[in-house]
Image (cartoon, rainbow, N blue to C red):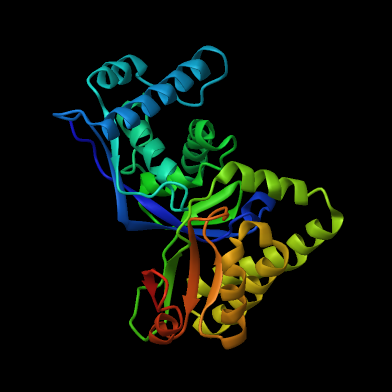
Length: 311
């Protein structure tokens, strides 16, 4: 058995803001991928993944018995496949903000969900919200709380525009060009965990000043970035990304690894690149935006960059 491939994702805009109904834009990133496989030969890695999947299967069983499942699964078949050593063969780095658990959830749904919504159907808003809710319930096993967006992106393999928590739709994004600008991933060299970062954010939300900043600055600039990106208005986009990058540096410092504070500031001062969080932060990747990729590569020559979109 070798299941279909599910890809990683990148939330270009909307991290943290979508909790407070900002816009968001998530795109598939096909460089990393994963699939469910029953191995010919077991290794320590396949056994570790298999044990992780067994715990996930037990979690789905618990939901079915105790809670109200949003989707029913063929858990008997899943248990049978697990007994044969099934594991999730994935190149997606964990704790890097590119949706490793999302791809796994999408793969499990695709393989074992009963009465599943398929990607070939006419995906109405209701169906998208049904999928998102089911994925959120499944992925909460990994993060404690999930929006369901990462698995949705991985499952559909389409860019997704989040207008609000109750209004999501597949999005058409401008075709890539090669005029020198790019979005890139910058490797922090360390993993980050989602749950503690989200918990930290929720603590900050208890303060009126932080809530006011989030609404009046963070969400405003995030929404503008999404609109500019979809319209292909690169000039306006970079002005708003710079504002967003500065707000994140000023108010989300615990989510940025300490050794990158200076690098973040240097981008704002030189305009060679602007950095923002990729996912919840705390490690993993950071997202970079530049209008001159060669210049950014020269300035960031000591760091590993992966280009994900070109302007």
